[in-house]
Length: 221
Image 1 (cartoon, rainbow, N blue to C red):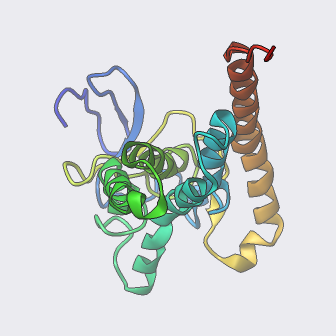
Image 2 (tube, helix red, strand yellow; image 1 turned 180 degrees about the horizontal axis):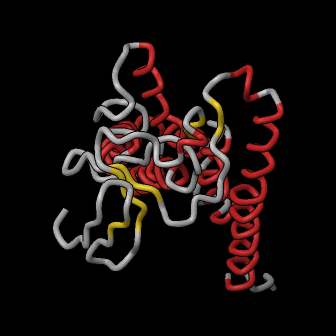
């Protein structure tokens, strides 16, 4: 990508914005080999972003049916786990954490939501924005995990895989048996600390600030 200060595979890459990402070349081995069997946050935790946005903005701005669409969009990128069943390589553009985790894919889902919005009684722009943000949040959360390959955030322009520089979230096992075992409990505890509590705390704070800032209705004579 233009404007990057590039290092070797698995090194640091600095985009023109100045933000530093942990970077992997396509086809590389997992960046965190000790966690190579864990690939993502639990799929339920991805729903926290649209839920938090809805709590912050309130039902008048985010209708329940739009919230449902946002939750579905936030989980949709993990449809690419089917790639394992289809023998598509993990590091392939259409492997796990590839194309479906990109910003481009999030915009596609937002565009689909905008197209369907009038049939659901929703405003197109609001549906597009909420669904796009919900879907894009999936890849960003995966970039905070400590397992597997990074996220192809800029596909189709680049197949590079990225992590954020602070991989604090324990990645969830893909095996349901392991999810409900000790490893799964560690993941849930990590997600509670690093995702649910901060997101819901920010949502509650934003909601309270919004209520205080809203003009009070004058009493009727």
